[in-house]
Image (cartoon, rainbow, N blue to C red; front, side, top):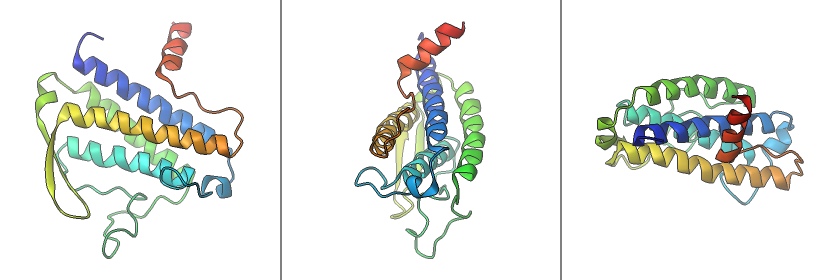
Length: 183
């Protein structure tokens, strides 16, 4: 990696690859297993996947200037009067479709990054308190990736507890080895 932008792009490439692997691992599970309650993460595989999607959704919105974005599925019922602009995501198939669209937007955004942009402020308004705060763009981009790694570990733990034998590949080195093998 020669620049900070290159490193952030690589981390985002890894995050998108992991998301696809998590969705593939969840796909064969019955709805009951997807929604089984666990005392970790967001409480179930399904809720944790929705949470990952929602975090990526709101942070990308903030990065492009929408500091008040709310994603469907993550905060349904938490806001007074359920103030969502969209209905909650009802199924894994719908989540996969929306996440695929979001991944394309992320790829485009990351390709447009410049080194100068990394120091710019990104504003976000807390959807529950209304409080505004700013963070450096580079910190937001790194946060999205490290948040995803944390939540991914929780999802893998839930899959393990369900007895899934072939856990999804989530380590960057696995991605790198796959790329080297296909080169």
